[in-house]
Structures are given as structure tokens and as C-alpha cells.
Amino acid sequence: MGLIEASGVSVDLGGRRILQSVDFSIERGEIVTVVGPNGSGKSTFIRSLIGAIGLSAGSVRRAPGLVVGYVPQRLSLDATMPLTVARFLNLPVLRNAREVKTMLEHVGVGGLGGRQMSALSGGQFQRVLLSRALLSKPDILMLDEPTQSLDQPGTAAFYRLIETVRQEVGCAVLMVSHDLHVVMSASDRVLCINGHVCCEGTPTVVSAAPEYRALFGSGTQGAFALYQHEHNHHHPESEGTAVDA
Image 1 (cartoon, rainbow, N blue to C red):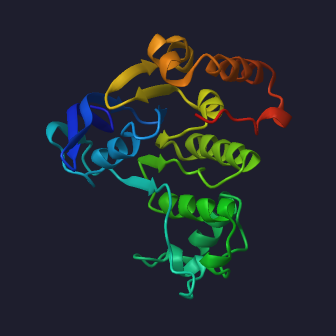
Image 2: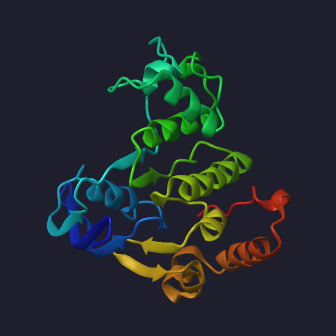
């Protein structure tokens, strides 16, 4: 079986059906991105896969011993609470100091171990969250709109980092994103959700699907054309461009 396999997953919240009959699987090493309009159930889908939300119907099977590294959409910390980056990374499990230092350097925030969490920029904060997820040596990394608070250059840099992590660590990556252009350049497979699976496949297949066009408009073809251009020619100066759904 894959790392995670969902079959007929339905979720009701507050008396309303959020997800209906979703089938999904992800294999080791894959990067799969979940897209969809606001309120489409993307975050609910991610949380159902890790068991944080109960299912109304269907089932989720996880590979035995599966280790999940989770990067939430946002994490609220009390700004008045003294908490350094190093201390945060040692909660709830005490980790080797050298391992923590190496991981911070690996994700591009080396030297910030003694900095207060409350003093970090949005990009630094997300990279610290990523380092925390990676310290668990995950089989799969799950990211729920991790770039929501970042500007376009920061967003592009973060996703490039995710690609690098996948190559070096070998873990699967499942991420929710609104950054359609970046999704196209970073994904092996795209899952389009609007309460149910509207369409699924490679970026090429999904971008051409009528269901995808209906949700995101014809302007998304411009994003896909840019993806193709960059994929073939790799112009770094345009990597910060994103199409916001």
C-alpha cells in the first residue's frame, strides 16, 4: 500500500458535510498539492488524513509506523512568553543540540537558535516550523498553506526549499496551497477539491480540466504557461510570481 490511503472519506462538521466520498493515496517520495477555493475542505482533508478529525464515512489507512511531519497553516504563540527557537524545537522531545543546529542551518535559518520565537519574521517562523517537522525524520511532510503569511519572493523561496528537502530526505510531501503558479512548478500531482475531488492528475492534466477552469478561471492558463516556460528555461527572476486564487 501507499504511505496513506483514503477510501470514501466523508466528514461532517457543525451539521454540514465538508467532504464527500474522497479517495486518495500518496506514495513515498511524491509531492502532491491540494488546491481548491476557500471553504472547499482542503484543511479538513489534511486533518482527516492524520486522524485529527473524525470521519463520518470511509476509512484512512496509514502505513505501519508512519511518521508524519506536520506544518500548520498558522501557530499562535503568546508573544509575552519567553521561548527561544532552540527551546521550541526541544518541545516536547529533548533533541541533540548539534542536530537542532544543523537542521536550522539546513532550512536557511542557522544562527537563530537563541532568538525569541516572537521576534521572528513570517518567513523565519515558517522555516522553524519546517525544521521542527523534519527533526522527527518523517516519512511524509504535510503542509497546510505554509506560505499564507509570506510575500511572493518568500513564498517561492519556501517552495524551492520544500523541493530540496524532498530530494535530500526522500519523504513524501502533501501540501495545501493557493499559490497556483508555484503548485504547477513544484508538484508531481495536483488534487483539486471543492467538497469532493473535482479533478486529479499531473499539473498538465489538471490545468486543462474543465472543473479546474470553472473553479479558478481561464487566467490559470497564464500561470500554467509561465510554469512551462520556467520549467524549460528556469528564469529565477520570475519565480516569485504567484497567482492567488
